[in-house]
Image (cartoon, one colour):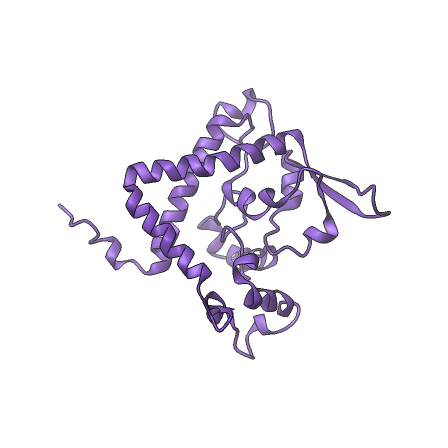
Length: 231
């Protein structure tokens, strides 16, 4: 029998963070799929249930939670590093883009009724899944995990967030030059307010292995860079 922790102890930190995050995401998405009327590409819901296309936790984390009920002008949303696939959310039935009554020739992004329903469900389910993890893995362990991560995000030194210390690019790095310099400066100044709330912004939350192999690799990486994954 394997010794507890013997396998995980060989994993680098990114792999540990990734497996925990993806496991949380799948459980969260499963529960959302169970509770929210939607359409999917496969399964019974593909043709029988009304509602928008099913979206994932990254869509909520990086965008939908920040969209107020009254909507927001696109000119404001365009500068948000958290912005995800707005065209997809519009196409899938969660957000509508319409003329801004307060400004000529401007556009406004607003939640649809289904978007408001999804927003309420997403917000509630975060607590539901976290409570499940407390029951499954132990409230003390999950509490320590949360406390440790909060400490990493909140720590400062000389008035500057310690999290930003590793975000400074070398002078020859691409993040040190336009058009990325503005975003880099914002991350250095306020990493917790600028970094995404979810590290991937593709539709299902991660890129398939096929996308990262063969001739598709270059285009996949270019798409990720353009969408904000590669900050």
